[in-house]
Image 1 (cartoon, one colour):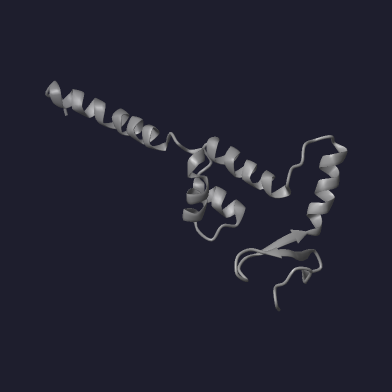
Image 2 (cartoon, helix red, strand yellow):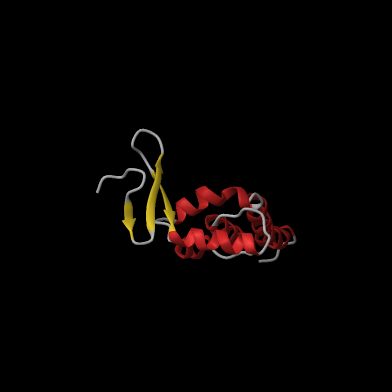
Length: 117
């Protein structure tokens, strides 16, 4: 099927625009219209359904949910995609890793310095 604005891809999806030279299609879901009405009725600022997806991923990662699990829940093909997309959410990963290694190595270094095993 040719992707062009206005084409219906499925009963719930419609192409609303193309990005680049015949590249990625911007697809709009019928659920988005329902969501838009709910957001407006609740008096909330404009919010896309997709924004909630990003929020959920961010909250899961910050809460310590393993990136592989977050990736699976988002339906990403690889955990690498998830980490590349959301790595800015986890700026403390390097520090946390260093602290873990410090906690593992420090007792061993103390034992070694005192002649213990």
